[in-house]
Every structure is written in C-alpha cells, then in structure tokens.
Length: 274
Image: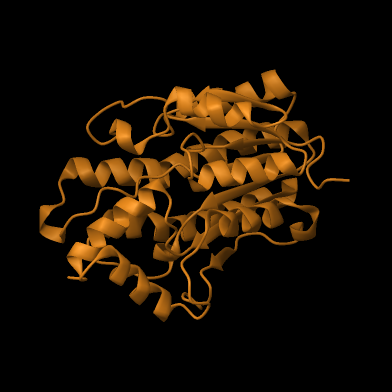
C-alpha cells in the first residue's frame, strides 16, 4: 500500500514548473495522496513579479498531471486566504492530513545598505509569517479532525548559516527554526508533527536566477564556474535536486517519522553539517 493512500495534502508555492513545490506535490501524489496545488496565481505587486510566481495556468497544468488533485489560489501573506485554502482541502477532498509550507521569496537579494522596507517586509511576510499562518490554519483543521497530521516547512541551508545579500531571507529561514521548535511543543499532544526541511542550493527556475546573481556577486568567470566551485565544496559533489527535498518531505510526512517533531533536517549533501 502506498504511504499516503487516503491522505489529503496541501502544498503552497507548488504552481511553478521545475520548482520544489511541484516535486513535492508529485511525490506525495505518486504515493496516493490527494493534493491541493496552491500558488499566488498572478502578480499582486512589485514584490511578486510574474516571472517569479506560479500562475493559474501553470498550477492547472501541474494539477492535471496528478491522479487526484485540485488547485486553489492563495497569497500566503493573507491569513484569510490561508484559512480558505485549508477549507478548500476539506470541502473538495474531505479532510486535511499533510500541509507543506513551501511558498517563499528567494529573489529579493541586495547588498545590506540597499534593502528597502518594502523588500524586508515582502520576504518576512511570505517566508516566515506565511508559514505561521499555514501552521495555524492546518493545525486548526487537524485538531478538529482528531487524527493528527503532518506539517512541514521548507526552510533552507540559510536557516543554519548566513549568506551575503540575503539578510531578510536568512532571517526568515532562521526564524522558521524557532517557530517550529515552539509550535511543535503545542501541537505534539494532538498527534501533529511539525518539522523543517533545509535544502542547500537547488537549481530550480528561481535557483537559475540565483546562479546568475551570485556568480556576479562573487566575481566568477561564468555561471558554470560558479556551479563547479559550489559542487567542489559539497561532500557529495553536486548541488541539491528538487527530488532530494521532495523525498525528505515525504519521509517526514510518513508513519516512519511519527516520532520526529521540532526538527530542522539538512538535505545538503553534507555541505551543512550542523
């Protein structure tokens, strides 16, 4: 029997091709879960440009490849929309067992002295506050159902270490470690586990943009040279793949991980050992 047969999963930020969210949604679906593919759907403001978000058409295409899936537009900065996303899972699929907070902003990177209040708020609102609203909305349904559940945040290597030009991003991901440690204490008695997955660099669509940006920041001769240097400092000699993160999420959502909570699991090929 597949591990998630009869389970219902929500994956935020899963509406972009070749993204972590798509890989997570497909992996959970392949093991039997009904999946809600969710993303912001369209640009809302200057901090959510169309090239960096999952559009409604892309969401529908991803959901169409899954055996049992639906789509739901959600801006995770808005707790009302996040609660509506949880309600959608119950109304359309009959319940909620797995919630993956994957939506994030990783494309606002600037030198420290150039970061604006709008930049800071955008990153914190999505990466940290958006996860808080997701935890709260998912837990409310799971507690009411009385059968436990699994909540996973996609954090980052930046939850453990600092990086230049990524002040808000690093702060938001470090914040997830504290949020998860705290909230897991309250959710444990309800049979709900809460964990972070902390991948190192993954060349998704967003990751390709980051490659271009940071190759220039460090003065690499080319993107290829930048990626070669990255691979050489990773013990397993390659950056992460979307499937690496998806497999870790699936493990934490499975019965095999039923006694694991409040943890921040590195998926970095040994690059981030602590």
